[in-house]
Amino acid sequence: MPSNFTILGAGLAMAGAALSLTSYFVLDFVPITALGLSVIIVAAVSFALGMGQPRIPPDISSMLLESGLENTAALVEELGLGSKAIYLPPSITEGRHRALLTISPGEAPKMNQQLPNRLIVRYGQLPDSMGILVSTLGSTVLQRYGQDLSGADLGGALSSILKGFTDLSDGVRVAENGARIKVEIINPRIEFRRMQVFENLGSPLASIVASAASQVMNAQVRIMSEEISGNRQLVLLDVERQQ
Amino acid sequence: MRINERYILSLTSAFALGTFALALFDVIQLDLYISVYIIEYFIITLLHSPLKPRAGRILDIIGYALFVVFVVIVALRVWDILFGFALL
Image 1 (cartoon, rainbow over the protein chains, first blue to last red):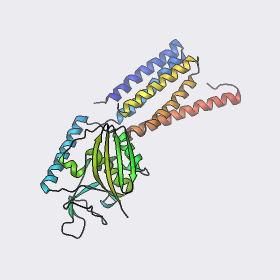
Image 2: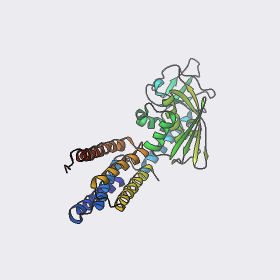
Image 3: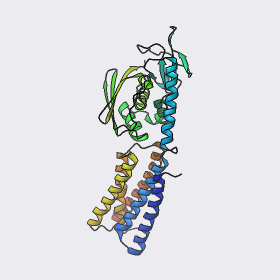
Image 4: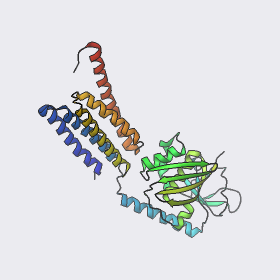
């Protein structure tokens, strides 16, 4: 099923061609001929935008997201994990974006070794230095669009992802203060809900922000807090850079 | 309003305004209209970048095509000025 933009493009292309040809050969009136040509350019742009539209209907995408979240929530709940997730840079997770939920809550452990691409991982020598590596919405988004962010700073990367690639917000502001980074998401389009699993992993938008920060800064990132303030979602990150 | 919708709306408005303004000054050179559209296209596209990578790649191709058209228009104008007669 072609998207609305593709159908619009087809309609505009026909109308533009008819308008410019009629005006050029019959009416001999330049402004209308030019207007017809401009309509053809808009048609081409509309086709291009149609090609970028998702093939899966948004409702189904939303259901897939919810079912994925419910599975992760059930896993976290069953294992009794109460720690905040640590978003790891791809450099220590075999090139894949992952979040680590440790068994023992408290201070975030410093990762000095590569972690295997498995569900249950050991990250240190102590008996309780274990956790689970999970994939989040942020992991998937970065897996898809991460290669288009090379050389960007955090603000630019988040703006590209949230405003451009995924159209999840109208803009992003980033304020850095040492190891703390405050990210302000303007007009977020994913409804902010309080769920138990979000206490561990962060909301879907915060998860994207944390994943992007971990890749761009090559750092371990934790979501310290998030809140809604008017039409903005504020996310506070704690960043520990890799050596 | 989503970014794609804003982009299409901005482009359409810019083209409509450009056509109206040039028609108001009785401009009858088609190449001038096309040049203005091409410049408007590049400005509006830049202001709405980045778009989804797949759409962005196709918009790049459209941009290359329009740039070639622009270069041809400029080359014809230069020819006209240098040699005193128009090729087309």
